Image (cartoon, rainbow, N blue to C red; front, side, top):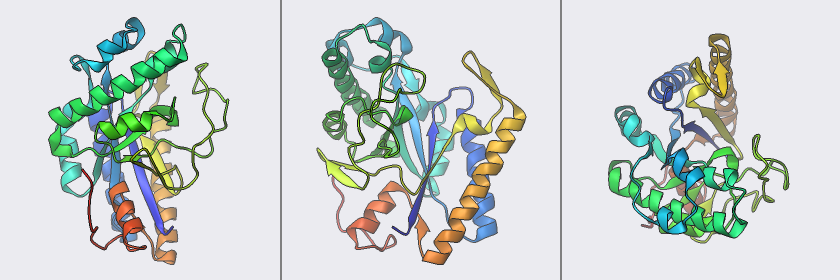
Length: 276
């Protein structure tokens, strides 16, 4: 496919706002030097608190109203609004924290909690932040604990999932945890339970914290490392821009990719319909 998608997992409270500004500025540099438009997809973290995931094992609780939470849409509302207004796509980022860390619970209970939480969090985003029209989603670590989760995401208004990484090997550990990956459900775009799965192919990923020196209890990221990551990101975008120029392709968002698919290969053509 003559397209590339550039994505950001925006997930760290201390670097979120500045990370958005820095990454967008790096995009601006490449757009200017290469004469190409690069819309970005911002996957913004929204979910309940660590204490809830580790301390509560009732699915009924997670079906309830989301109160205290990490709300990246609120933390960086001004920056995300600016990104939306220039044509970027705003999506939802979520780590299956309860599933990964509550191995004392049966798998069936963890899946039930996950499904309940996805629905309640997704609906909370729609209620709190309708201005962003969130339709795209990505699990942290590219870890989909159970493929039945796509039904829950669809019921929460999600139309596109970007969590499937065909390079993940079944049975390998998730990050530093004992949870393991399932076999990739697909290696090409496919609709499952009403959600369009777009695998991690022809796709760039960078995190907000990659470009900002910082130190937290579990990770230290110094200035030379951040500068190196910024330089690598810019170089990668330039390489991809050059290839797209040769192939006649373009950078797109997930919505733009769906237009490309729906119109037989022209990502600039108007989409005939949109669900939801």
